[in-house]
Amino acid sequence: MSEITIIEGGVTAAKGFEAASTAAGIKYEGRTDMALVYSTAPCTAAGTFTSNVVKAAPVIWDRDIVRKTDGTVQAVVVNSGIANACTGEEGMSICRATAEAAGKALGIPARSVLVGSTGVIGMQIPVDKITKGVRALAAAKASGADAGTAAARAIMTTDTVSKEAAVTFEMEGEGGMVKVTVGGMSKGSGMIHPNMCTMLAYITTDADIDKDYLQELVSETVDTTFNMISVDGDTSTNDTLLVLANGLAGNRKITKESGNGEAFRQALVTISTTLAKMMAGDGEGATKLIESTVLHADTQEHAKVLAKSVICSNLTKAAIFGRDANWGRILCALGYAGVDFDPDKVDLYFAAGDHKLLIFTNGAAADYSEEEAKELLSGTEVDIISDLHMGEESATAWGCDLTYDYVKINADYRS
Image (cartoon, rainbow, N blue to C red; front, side, top):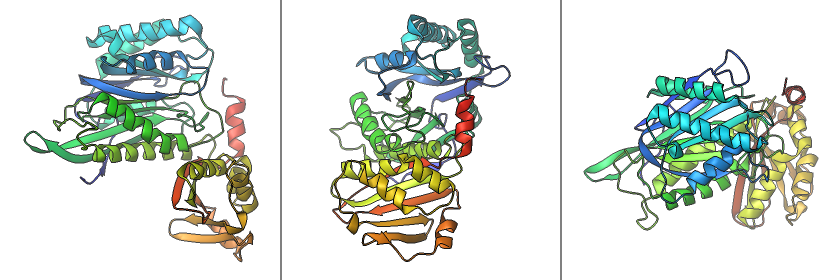
């Protein structure tokens, strides 16, 4: 299998993809709040969407298009500031007007335009502002890393940093080996909780890949990446992951039957993991990324449930913020996860980089230094390792600490 190489860039890293941003004044004046991702060639599309019963209008619009067996996609228009959720028929008409405006401005069918929104729930998007914004995006679209970064910044809400990633690998083409690129961007800082996927994420690739197989790989990847993060336990109404493949790399078509999809799968996992960790670490008010790894579980599903239980524990998150090695909260979170295990056989560790400290073993506290533990918890990334000594399965989840600023941010989110 070809080596996966990490490169600079995001949604414009792959051949044929362009992007743009603009300040449309959707909710706030004077800041970029709309983004466009455009492919010069029609794309095969796959996606996953929120499991929340309350689904935003863009989720319903996109899901209908992506699930069509014969449809292709060529553009995505995203706005921040207003989520277009709980907006009734008017919300769907905004999606339609956005797609029609984009289709006209870009010279493509309206049904090949996907839409995304993030921001305050319940407000209506001014149709004149968003259609004017679409025209500005179409006029400004460009290739190159700067355009991709500008698009990533435009979809931010309470995010403190934009989130991008890109990789390349080689595959066999008709005339020899060709380079395939996968790039992506995401936004997400609050209302982040496992269940597909509490965020907006857009991944682009110039790979040529079968639509059904792409959807299978996307669904599989989400389960171990985006679905393994949590900030606050709230699953959003707008969660959307879209993957667009335009086939311009010139590789031999990736299909399940040919068995040539492993490098692409690894690239998709790398991009998804990178973006997922960036979102978890940029949780609202957060100062630390928490990585929870469960080792030697009896099944992978049990390992996943246990790992997520730790990063979802508010008491554990608060302890990490306070640099308090309160291992009792971790053990408690493992214990109420609904998975049977023997606590007397569990080993708990704190780790950061190459430094690993045993804090609980043989059913009681280990002989560790509180000062050493506090030092481990003082960095921007903290690893919690739970070794169950039951089997061979493992899983990792990502979250963040719980700080005073989380309450401040969410107490006045609508103002």
